[in-house]
Image: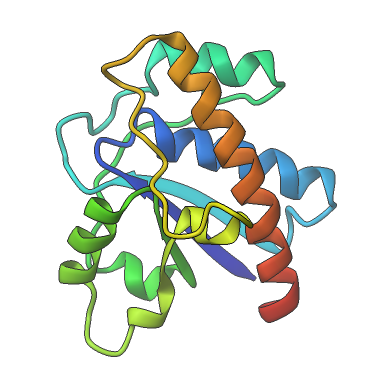
Length: 157
């Protein structure tokens, strides 16, 4: 069983979208029994809240259901519970690196490092922009999700 945690700032836009997209992808590939997916935020402002309505609508247009996801805050213990902790941007990656117990750094990754041609880039936070930002984020997330799945198949399954 491979456990993956997606992390952004508030866990209401990017990371729940990544969770939903990746969950759909692993179901399509028949891997739902082998890969567990969750999401969290480095901040705790939205704990218990559903994803942003704009993210929900954009995902739904692509057949991705985010309705069951509720925000939670990432913890130090997540580094023991998850095999891969995937940050949406460099700032959240840095926050997670400070939270990471010594010896567990290998678990932490930047999400777009799994998308050929987008390595080292951030998934931009669409929260303060318009609806088109959520579509652009979905494009990036779908691309990186495919790369992440290939990585998991190659290294973990």
